[in-house]
Amino acid sequence: MGRAGATFSKPLLCQSKLLCFSLFYLFSALFSAAYFSFSATRCIFRSSPFDPIQSPLFSYPSSYGEHKHSIPTTRSSCNSPVYFSDYFDVFDEIQQILANSTSLGLPPALRYNQGNADSFGGSFDIQKRLSYFDYSDGEIEIEIPCGFFKPFPITTSDRISMEKCDGVVVVSAIFNDHDKIRQPRHLGSKTLDHVCFFMFVDDATLNRLHYQNLISKKSNSYKIGAWRIVKVSVENLYQNAAMNGVIPKYLVHRLFPNTKYSIWVDAKLQLVVDPLFLIHSLVVNENVDISISKHPFFVHTMEEAMATARWKKWWDVNGLKIQMETYCENGLQPWNSNKPYPTDVPDSALILRKHSFATNLFSCLMFNELEAFNPRDQLAFAYVRDKMKPKPKLNMFEVEVFEQVAVEYRHNLKLGGAGVVGPKLKRAAATSDLFVNGTCGKCEGYLLSMWGESHD
Image 1 (cartoon, rainbow, N blue to C red):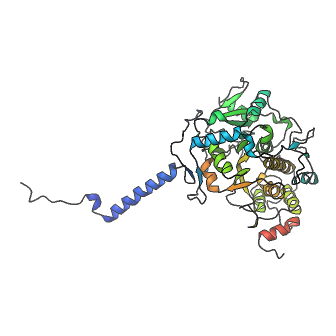
Image 2: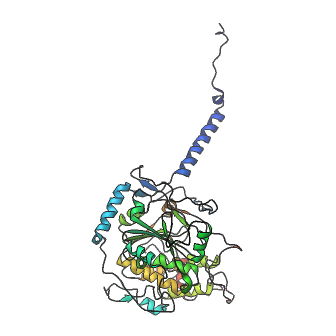
Image 3: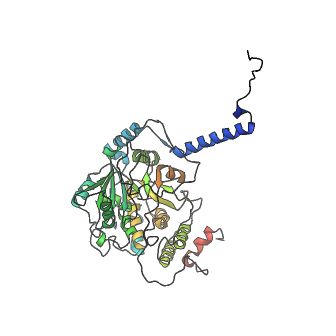
């Protein structure tokens, strides 16, 4: 009964081809969005998906806001992916290298100038600094200036802990409460027992941590999650907080004299890949001394210098001009395809080092230039790299890789607007451009070559 009147029809959703297509497109888009949102391996690949992962290392109070104001990335492709081996294979190989340090092939150690001076770095003039660039004749007995002409004011217990770190160290710094302390993520099960994490801070930063109940000032030592917090008394160092940060950034080999590898992480970054993976894939496997990201926009040093002046990343525009003219006069050339590097400008927020002779020499020479001019290390990078001998073997990896191994956050907001990047000094009216009215000075040849107008 009733069979004659029974009819069979397509489900309502399938009666409209347009509707079916729309739903298919919607679910495909949602799947793609979910994949690219939650996948952390668009530019990095692991041989095993079962690497051990650590749970969160520290619970912050909600008022601290350690994950606020992250900077989104827009790159959805990768031209040079990085491959990570199995975690335990990486761990075993690095432990073997550290146990047999002769496999690093380290030449005799650098010798450093000793003595006292009015500044931490000694304030050497250009001719004196130039005299230390060439060690190609093996004159290892020459002593090079490399900071520490004043004491680096930390506690004895911190100094002892730093000297005990004899393998891999991850280093960062926050001065003048400029950033927040963020915990590394996705660490393997053995990493914290074999990798040191040190964060250098000043009183302003320490006071904020105490105010947020992250530390107790009654303690003789401080630790927040993975990071050992080292207080630096900066009164007798530099007036500029960024320059104080340059000390652990470029003199890490002197602060940690027994360490074989180091990773510098700007405090605006949060590592989201185990540091052992980074050292293994970007340094050991590449057989290099230093691994650093390319700049996302610039290839010429002068481009970075002009941007630094125009966007007021450094307060003394005339000083920037003097710096660039000094470098042009002493051989700085714009990037070209004949150079064995893909760019002259790095993103120095993340630096991976093997502590070799050439690496340590590069770090000392860089520090001397930064003290002589300003802490904008991208401006001195190519000048030091191209002029020094012997040169460190360098891996300048793709920006996409940088964006996959670290999350970048904005600096802490200060009352009254952007933080001051230099001392408030009265100075002659300086334009926001380095070279105006055709006054290229000693960099005219550089600029003509950079712009493709040279007729040499």
